[in-house]
Image 1: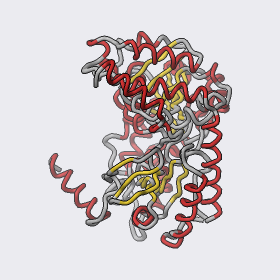
Image 2: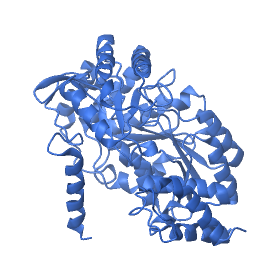
Image 3: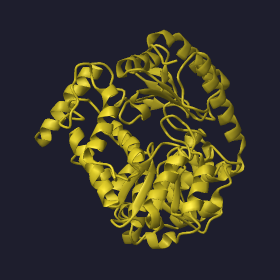
Length: 82
Length: 398
């Protein structure tokens, strides 16, 4: 089973091309304020992550997500729940 | 941020983008002369931002039917059908819609938005799953949120992405409603419905198709993509609107597999909204008979949108993946799209829609033209030429 770090690492890979030059990505990176992602982009990103880890993450789980780490945690919890 | 602070921030963003010039999202159309022409800024302009696909808003028989109903039944119903009762024309319209689609039941709503809210929230609740195409309309997203069900998305027009998710749902598929659209409103592309139906047949679930932009446009009888693809038997619910091909306002749902009469008791957007005005119901009934009896309107519409799509393609615009009455060009950034929109209106006298992200797929702004059967070949040619004149304004994607 994938670990939290596996999910975070994959997520940061997807985020790299979306970050402005010089922006260091970490689990604390803010998706909206730092990376300027809108809700559509975050939900599209989730489609990739869902397929990579063979998991389903409902939209409502994203309501409180602000950072890359929080998004990775949501996905990881769904993986654990099976 | 305080409640009012949100609006201060919105006001700043609006001023940064629009300055003091025209707001494309608050435009005043001073007069409408016909289905294809109106007056904006005191000038006669060509209308291509109306979704008036069959041009029936000024059809003499539709206007006469509306006027007669206004005189016979009054200006409004002043309440919901559950509380105040149904007028005979409401029931007649539902019977005619069911007959038009060849199904057992139909249900009319006061707006297309309410139809999606009303059916999705009545059918699904916290124990259920909604599995929707990622490009579905805001009314579908809002209905999903309001239902309390778990909402999952699959990649736009990708049956394989749908398949993977249905597979992961396992036994929960029995409580899953899949939602797609006939023609998607932003880029004008159709759902691969035959393939989606195959996946649904393999795994199960209910399938809803929103034909808001395809009813009256596709299919030999104008029923939409479900008819065009011969998938009637596998589609459980068809949604539609009166505000596009039918030239009025309102929405509907038709179904053969579900008893919609029971949904009336549980659909809050149906129960707590005043029912459609008699004049609206009358013009819609007339328009429905025109869709049924005048297939030449669909032929003319198709000729018009093929001409415009090919013309803009030749000019090098980046368009939606296939021709349809929605002809949308992608722009690289909001400023270039806004400049184009303004100059098309002010210099060329042509009104189209400006669509901004995040409402647009791919996060890019769109200039969207909606073609009508009522446009003359000369008007379509004029639009093509105008797009040619302004081609230099934006660095359009290859």
